Each structure stands twice: as C-alpha cells, then as structure tokens.
Image (cartoon, rainbow, N blue to C red; front, top):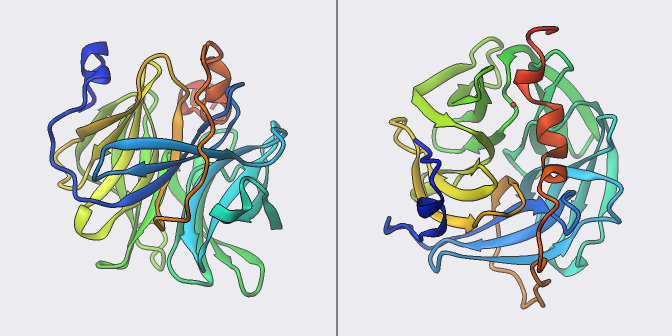
Length: 289
C-alpha cells in the first residue's frame, strides 16, 4: 500500500531491485506531460532526457518495439494520435495515425506489429483496442472492461495476458488482468494496491510487475508483482514534483545530455492535466488515459 508520508517519499527505500532500464513520462517545466525520463533500477536513479514535441500535446502511454518508442499524444479535447520517437531524436516525434478520442489509459506492445491501448469515455467507461502497426488500423476488442482502467497497461509474454491499473471512485487502485481474445474477461488480481493516482505499468520479466505511484505530489516506483498489494522501491521525484505517468522497459541507449530539473517546480497542478480529465471521481455521479 502506498504510504502518504513525506518522510517515506524522500527516503530511498532499502528494497532490492534487479538491474534494469525503464522509461517514464513526467511533466515539463510547465507541468505538461511530455518529459521523457530514464530510470535505472539498479542504481535507483532518474535522469530527465528530453521533452516530446512543442508543448501543444500531452503524452500518455509508452511502449518500446521495433527499436523505437510509441506514445499517445492528446490535445486538451482528448483527440489522440499515435506517435513514435527514438532516444536519438531528442524529443522529435513522428505522427503515425489518428486513434480517435480518449486514448489516455495506457499502451502496450505485444510484438513488432501489435500494440494494445486503453481508451476511456467521458463517463469513465474503459475499452480495449488493438493497434496493427503494419495495417495502420485500430480495432475495438472489448468495449466493456468496466470503469476507471486508466492507469497503465502492459503485456505479459509469459501468460499471454494484458495487465492494467484501474481506480474506483474513491481512487483505490487495483491490478486487473485482461485476456485480449476473450471480451469481458477483465478481473482484479489480488488485493487492492492502495490509494492515490497510479500511472504507468510495466512487466519487466524476472524483475516482476512494476508501476508508478503518485501521492501528494511525489512519485515512487512500486513492485506490484505478487498481487498482495504494492511495495515502494524508491522515490522517482520528491515533493514537490511533477507527476510521473507511463512506464516501459527500454534500451540502455546512447549517451545523452540530460535536461536540468526545474529550479522551482511550483506548477504542480498542470501536471495532472490528462489524469484529472479522465478521473473516475469526476464522473459516476453524471456519470483509468
């Protein structure tokens, strides 16, 4: 369970993490979610690399395939486009094709041509889509996953299932398994993970299932492997910081010149731009991308 204390947030927890390289997206100096960060789990370090695009789009979901990254860029109105970039691009993105609206719930790669994505309607209803990169086609696989699956998505090559992070109206998080060939199969796994906004999920093989937890402005890397809750591994950014979202395993990459962290990160709220727009708590009464 995520512990909402500043002392825990600022500490580097003594939980063993196997060496690996992850990538995540956080807010830029103005809180727009487009900053790519490299996470070295062996050294427990986070290095901001570059910002995606010109700041007119927020990016959610992150997957690595075909020696490049894929992410969903969305306007403030939720219009979503699939983009690609590499570490050598230094923030230059290439649009591939439009996805539709509401694709801010997570992105996962099954193979070089097959991606999966979560979309969320204004009512908070979640749907699973298949993205065929070869045919540049988007297909609806499951329109009835439930509500609030907007936190992240990953593919487990060992059991052939997708896993997603979902939130109820009280922001209690749970890990869900999804069989992409069996509509209606979404089901919670284990006990709830805790409260707060959790964005980003990655199946890292022997390293287990890792997620990003955001609570009161600080971000942590979490182990959610066992289904028995969430175990904080180390702090990604202390309070006050920009919210981290999207998570994927990736290459060590060529040497890069990291961008400096903002001296006074006082624009915290804009970092929740996409997360608040898709929050299940703002719907349900009228009524996790």
